[in-house]
Length: 245
Image (cartoon, rainbow, N blue to C red):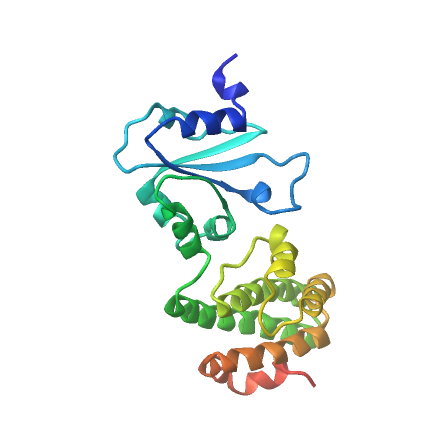
């Protein structure tokens, strides 16, 4: 039977550890999140090769089975992965399995877990405007007798809201699967985790306008404190529709 079909996680780690071309091994996904492993969880592993290294391990690029999913990349490509991009959160909470760079692999992951001040401010402003837009459309559609459109816009607004709140804390937004896990271990400063999750659940389930407006009021305070008042003020009189009645 071909090796690609029988290779286990432990066997591959042993193989990679014995290869001097490997600069590091990084485990991501559910197995890097305590308490999130299920019967269906595979091992998602980054294999980081020294730049310009020659190794037979490149034959495992794209290897994927129910147990083992491998991403084989150069060190330069690993530094760039998810910065920015969808992969950033996965790497932010990944675990180091092997680090031959005297902590260099761990430092790369730490950098991905923390947005720079400039990046966070820029992203937060953009997400705030997107959140305000979706929230405004939701309450307007509700006012105009368009319940389906109002609920759909409410769901969109929550997506932008979460991006905003994590950007304000200079963190990449977790995947939906890990939202509760993340907030339980790393709460957002100034926010009550239980209340925030109840609001998110209620808004995405029912599109309740009163709950949306009450949440917007809290977001407005946080956004202005973070220096994003101009983004909100650009909405002018439309803010009256968005705020609690």
